[in-house]
Amino acid sequence: MDEGDLRLKLAVQKSGRLTDPSLDLLTRCGLKLSRGKDQLMGYGENMPLDVLFVRDDDIPDLVQEDVCDLGLVGMNVIEEKRLELAARGHRARFEVVRTLDFGRCRLSLAVPEGTSYEGPSSLRGKRIATTYPYLLEKFLRERDVQAEIVTLSGAVEIAPRLGRADLICDLVSTGSTLQANHLREVETVLESHAVLIRTPVELPPQKDEWVQRLLMRIEGVQQVRESKYIMLHAPRAALPEIRRLLPGSESPTIIPLEGFPDKVAVHAVCRENVFWETLESLKKAGASAMLVLPVEKMLA
Ligand code: ATP
Ligand code: ZN
Image (tube, rainbow, N blue to C red; front, side, top):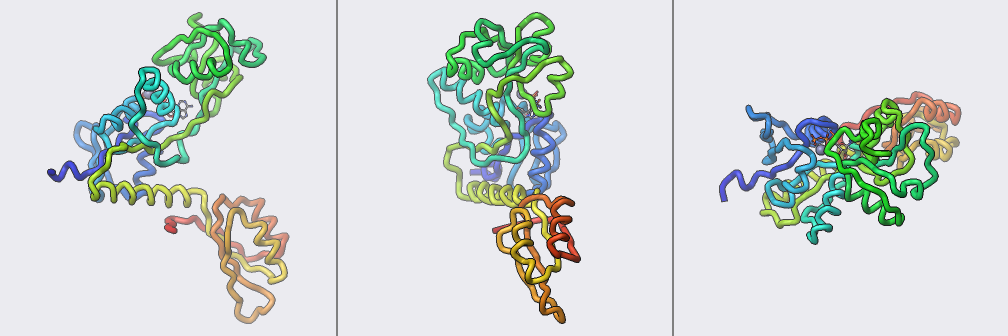
């Protein structure tokens, strides 16, 4: 086995909504990448991990065909692929190993403004444009609705205006694209977010160890993203109320304050963001000298 075989290959979207958050996650996991001249590969300088930049739709196949060991991709792409494979009598050969906190969106049905919608039965006999024919077919089948699926490769949101469809089934995050196209979201087909997938093939121990390390680091990165370290002074008597107010903290450290027998210092990790409102409530409960710090790394 040559040296190259012991390097992990991870597929990442080349250019799109998942690119920046994926690279940001890898950076936070400590990876330093140098991009090759062709821009198709990134070489890990300080980890035996290389990144392959590809179209997101190709990521499940690259992983199940063992070209890549890992991939960062949307659940929507994964679920569509699973159904497509099942329709051909195959089973997906990739495993979802971690849910990630980016790429949040939903696959939704949207009708042109001014069109009425009274539940799935309104879809009967309609033409629905989508790039997700398998997920849409499953949604319709489960509701016992017959409709025509118009499979497009992109620009789904303009299909109704072009007269190619009556409504659409497309990815939505804020809804601004729908609004700009005078469409109204009426039904959610799938909630989605990015995931890390891996090959089910057993990896050599050196590679597997790096997969485990990467998973642990991802866990740590995701935990600290929202976490804050809070320090404050409080009257002993106010401790129960203050503990109740600290968002998502398990067991705060209570430290005596020299010369103030009735007061303590409280240090706690909050697993949620700490907002001004929380600080104001803490102050009302008797807290003073409050300090909120970002958490950089965390390892259980
Ligand atoms: P590619 O050229 O790689 O095929 P694409 O046009 O299919 O790119 P993008 O629009 O960049 O893909 O979206 C990539 C993924 O980002 C989606 O599959 C989905 O998981 C996620 N995503 C998050 N929010 C949205 C959104 N509002 N619209 C589309 N995708 C979104
Ligand atoms: Zn795509």
